Amino acid sequence: MTASTSLLTEQATSRFVRIQEGDLDLQLHYNDAGTGPETVVMLHGSGPGASGWANFNRNVEPLVAAGFRVILMDCPGWSKSDPIVCTGSRSDLNARALKGLLDAIGIDRAHLIGNSMGGHSAVAFALTNPARVGKLLLMGGGTGGASPFAPMPTEGIKLLQGLYREPTIENLKKMMNVFVYDTKDLTEELFQARLDNMLARRDHLENFVKSLAANPKQFPDFSPRLSEITAQTLIIWGSNDRFVPMDTGLRLLAGLPNAELHVFNRCGHWAQWEHADKFNRMVLDFLTH
Ligand SMILES: O=C(O)/C=C/C(=O)/C=C/C=C(\O)C(=O)O
Image (cartoon, rainbow, N blue to C red; front, side):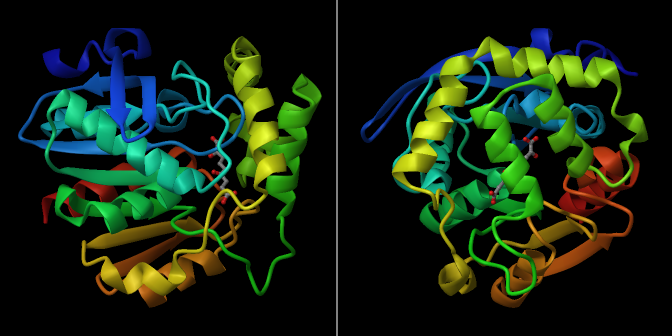
């Protein structure tokens, strides 16, 4: 561990910023780690209790050690960011929040890593702000839309929505057991931390349910527009993903002109966590070559 990575805790990297982006006027929470000429932004998924730190805590340190600045944005409606009810496209809402954040903290251009909803949001950002995107890494997400192979909503998304409606430890365990292929690393400590995150912000849970009632399709299908994105893209999927099925990754590969796809076997919806070491090596190789 170097001096620059020794202070990589959630608390030490926690920051708040006020953003004004069109009609969005919000306080956002983010984590800001490391220094360097290039910035990597990580965008988390849409589960109850998710946050940048919860999703990517196994992935920050290697990037910081390699000389990147890493920003984890907590999307509006999650963690310590302000609450919101989203009645339109949540992917586009998050993209606007990200533009507001980058403007507010003076970052012109960044590489984006998105997990699930974070992937949908990264694509929305790349479509509206192409000059501000370096490379794109999409994991278990990138576009909404139906799967021709898996019943929709998938079993994972049904559990996720059930947990928003009834936020109990039992429902949390049911959902998290489906997140990953191998459940042995899901400790009581991890369940408890995620439960605490969730229950700390009942307003976020209620707002998610209201948002879904107002617009059940929070994540639009970007397939017809993917060819507009010229950024070099690495798509990563778990072959056992029970939240966003792997054929979504194939759809992204077919649509994005400069993309390649890596599929992890024995891996669910959290490739960045389940295969963290290999994932981190792949990210560094992708970003530095
Ligand atoms: O419905 C979708 O397309 C997206 C679903 C998600 O974003 C689910 C993400 C779950 C997590 O990764 C999490 O940590 O909550």
